[in-house]
Structure formats: structure tokens, C-alpha cells
Image 1 (cartoon, rainbow, N blue to C red):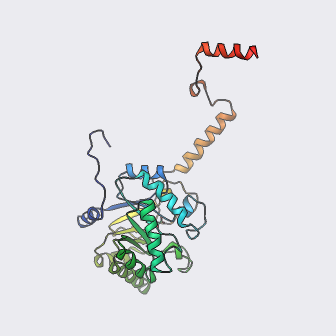
Image 2 (image 1 turned 180 degrees about the vertical axis):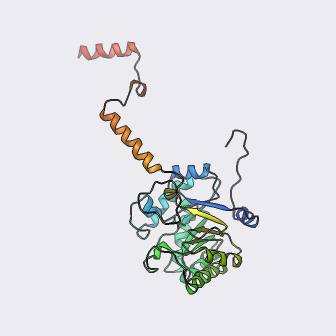
Image 3 (image 1 turned 30 degrees about the vertical axis):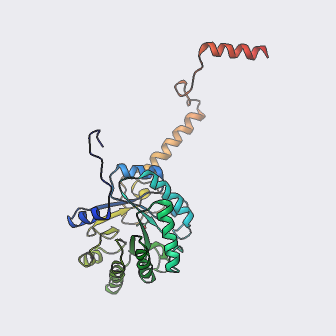
Length: 289
Ligand code: KIV
């Protein structure tokens, strides 16, 4: 931002709706800590999701399933401290909302009170629709998530595109409509053929954010570590890499290690100097011991 640019106004559900109505694409990205929050804030995105993808991108689990509420809260609080303009969405992890309305409300309230999220995201249709109704009734705005829902990927046959037959596509569309009817403020639709998104869009009045769901959604979301080339694991077909930061990071640390081992770093310019008279006095004091 230039020194004279007007500060950006905080994103609200109202400003997102206005962008949707004006056909302006919405930009969402994940972030998991304070520096990544500051980076996406400076890049001017509309929405930031502290996704449970954190389980894999920053915590080293091999799926999103094991991550806990406390782990997600710690990451979400760090992101909150780095954001002021975009809307912040907290992802409720697997096992923290499905069993009952009471559980869903108690977990979501922690994300709102302790981590300051603006909305919570929960996955799937089915019983999740009741949880959405309860959360909205409790005053907590909700983002639904349909299509490929990684928390239940095993039940879906693995990490694969959903809705590839007419019947399967109808099931995704029905989930989306049920979540909108239950009061979701927004939807994420993941890994479905673009025909499914195109068929769904005229049926929804809430903003829809796609990931691997074609170009017809109101906006797009990508995982921070995927788009910047920081994640070492395999990337899905829909990921586009906009930078290769992992290679740059390995090269930087390797150069540092080489310089330490070669006696190049630290140079005199990286150290602190003592005034000459103090250094002389120190030598005298040591000599007198
Ligand atoms: O956890 C996550 O990062 C997500 C996005 C991929 C939508 O749910």
C-alpha cells in the first residue's frame, strides 16, 4: 500500500454479498500463523480460513482427522493477531461438532470467544445440516463445505472428485441447498466437476467459494502452502503454484550452513563492538586476576 492509499475497509458479510451481486470474484486463502496472516492481509484477500488442512501443512499429520480443537485454536489465535481487514473463518476439526447441537455450539463458541473468528466452517450435509441450524440459532455464522469433504474422505472413497455422475452431482447439490436453507452464510465446494458448480450457482443466493470446482463459483480458495510451493506432500490437480518458496527456503538454509561451516558467517558487520578503552580495561582486569 502506498503512503497515501486509503486504508481498506473491514470485509463484512454485507460487503461480500455486494461483491457477489456485482460479479466481483471473492478471494479466500488459508493461513495458519501470524506471519502467514500478515502476508495474506497485505496481499489484500477478502477471506482467510484457518483450515484443518493445518493438520497436514503445518503439524505433520497424514490427514486432517487427528488435529484437535486446542491445536486449531492456538493456530487460529495467531492468525487473528495478524489480521484486521479480511473476514476470518475458523474450521471446526473432525469430532468437535458432529455428535450433537450442544457439542457444535460449545466448540464454535470457543472459536468465537477465544480466537475471535467471524464465522466457523463445518463439513458435509446430512446431520451437519441440523448442526448448522443450531449454530445459526446460537448467533454464530456458518460456512458449509460440500463435495470432497476431507474429514470424511475415507467414507467418500479417498481424496477424489465428487459428483461425477448425475446422481452423485444431485446429492452434492441437495447438500448445498439444505445447508443454505439451514442458514449457512456461505459455502465452500471442493473437487467437483465444473458442471456441478454451474448447475448449483443459479440455485444459491449465498456466496460460494470453489476449490477444484471450476470457474463458476463466486470466489476461489487455495491452501497457502500449496499456492506458494511450501508443502512437500502431493498437490491436488486443482492446485496452481504461484511461487516455489520451499526450494528458496532450502537454498537459504543450506547457504547459511555452508557459511557457518566455512567460517564466513558471522562477519564483523554482524557483531557488536566494545569501545576501545573498555576493551583495554577488560584486558587489564583479566590480567590482574
Ligand atoms: O482445511 C482447509 O484448508 C479447507 C480448504 C481446502 C477449503 O477446508
